[in-house]
Image 1 (cartoon, rainbow, N blue to C red):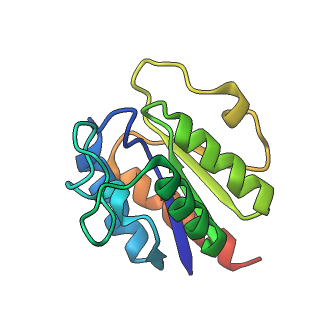
Image 2 (cartoon, rainbow, N blue to C red; image 1 turned 90 degrees about the vertical axis):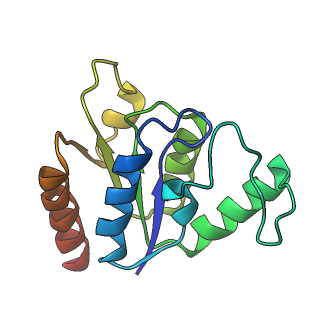
Length: 146
């Protein structure tokens, strides 16, 4: 199973430690195509580099992410930190008609009603990594039964 994990990179990396934990959970379910989301090498300050170390252009990033999305069987998106890119990736996944799990923590900031109101998505709030494991396990169990 190919998993596209979407979470904020340019919009803020304050949740990187949580992303690492989410990444580990997702890796137990299949191949995570977007390991850069939970990598320490991707920061807001540093330019994104390709596999050869060359600075990637915005077009390179779009092309790479689009190719990865085309391989994905499922999307898991953390929307705790607002990100235009994550919203776009959710839209791409919806257009491809693949299952979408949207997760978020209640940090006192409103989340997108357009995302949370879409009944095609499974949207779940989590507080701690323990209840997030259950959310992810339930989602993948439901996904596997279809």
